[in-house]
Length: 404
Image (cartoon, rainbow, N blue to C red; front, side, top):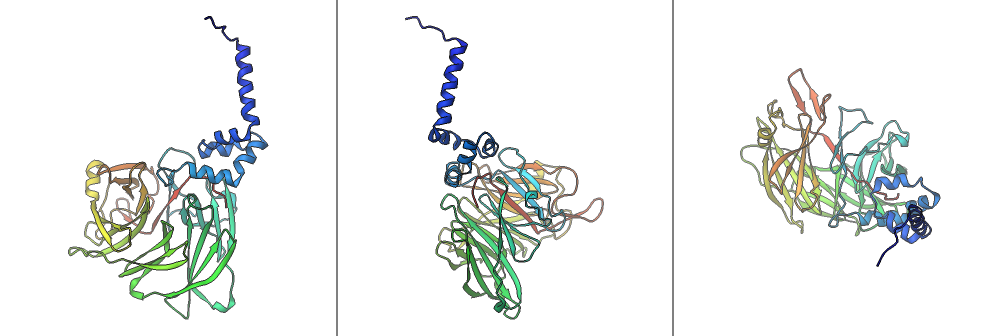
């Protein structure tokens, strides 16, 4: 049977008709848009009022985020690296993890002094220059919300305070902020307040607890994992806050002791629902550290592997590590999720390079070269020497439409 070949006019008319069908069918258009990556959707808001309305809808944003997970977890697009003392407050080093794309910064907030406290599944908890004023930001959508901690004159002078963020868009569109504070006249007695985005209110002094001075819990670096905020400790025990049940629980921090070297620093992190701990040691040439994994029932830390940066130097001879005695040959440690497998990747920054150990392949890899200039996390002592600085932070950046 002979088929009549369509003319270009007929093809154009057919295509136009299909486009009009999609344009006027909002359900069909929504199904198409929800399958697109996050960054194009931000631009597509400018196409029409209809597209702006669809993409800005909170239900669409939540469904889009939940659709783009991998095996039940979101995957970060990049790492934002920041040292405490050696970079301007508005500058970060960016390490692409999936594809290179310009990471939005916080210039749209118009605050000259913004300090990132924590990143959590696409949202950033930031501290403003004004005491007790915080911001929840989504850099992808360039939206933010200011929060003020309630003043309470009966508390007296507060000596220390710490904030942590809990957010899992795969389970709930709501987030919580945990605020821990201590009075001058009551050292090591802490009070815990909780802010809920669902109610837009604070629950004050929900919990009061004391901490043994020897436990030395680091409340300033909270790690959110499996619905709980965890804090690293250097004693026998540490604490974690169960966000759903709003209660504090203990977890062990006792680790096997090395006979040949005392502990120097601990780095707490998470990957795909597991807690990990990296421990560095006070050694003449500080190139070794141990990785521990917490059991699912929080009963103990299991030793996983001892890593030696000497193996990385064999692969990347341009690295100059261990040049200062009894100081680590690197600037920090963090954990990121592998693309497909349950095993984590251990990321650290050494001599201006970002390298990682891939547990699946059992080898070191170079992720990124920060390039010439000031080495992140380093204090230069002279032309040939540099002292690595332990207090260094990595914030995972997720492209997400999550609403505030």
